[in-house]
Image 1 (spheres, helix red, strand yellow):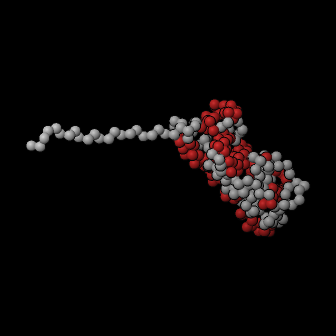
Image 2 (cartoon, rainbow, N blue to C red; image 1 turned 90 degrees about the vertical axis):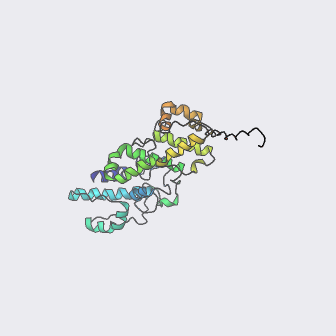
Length: 283
């Protein structure tokens, strides 16, 4: 419980600071790979982070969870007990009850608009970001979970195991139980880069629907079997040199050893020869 409120205040809420470069801040530009305020976020993420219920995880959620957590620690200082772990849905339903129960002015989450820092109040929906279901949006999701699991993996595994398992199902592309989006070496970064260039070459661009981890092996196996070029050739030469063969293996080792190029045509089966005609006249 203490870990939850500590993370809510210091990480997700960024201690109330407006510097959106702080790792793990809900509204942070840098912590979403440059794609904050994304639309069409996975529902399990909205259930955990969308505190004002507007369908976008943004600056106002950052400020709201900070204010809630700050009051939770004030209650702890006065009573020696922390409020229970809350979810956004629970808080939106019971915030007025919590006011009475604890005797503090928990903020009204409905329509909450109070951007942290010296900005004029504005809703997160005023400047919606990229679509989280696309390859471009996947960059933001992988950036977020890389940072979260880097510092708080045990917290998610123990406090929110359903969330933890869903993250691995959707974003652990090489099945090692780690979300590694470290540029240049991380398996998930290499997978995302491959997906990015593959869809660009196919003419769809980075707005193509992203392939989740639990469907990626079938996706890349089909490419390996039916494409007329090798998998590595979908990456520009500069990226092949940047990653290096060992890092590229993090992607290609999860693919069975299929030959590249289209499969050869099936061998023709010789037709059964017709019986030889009998020689001789009619009797």
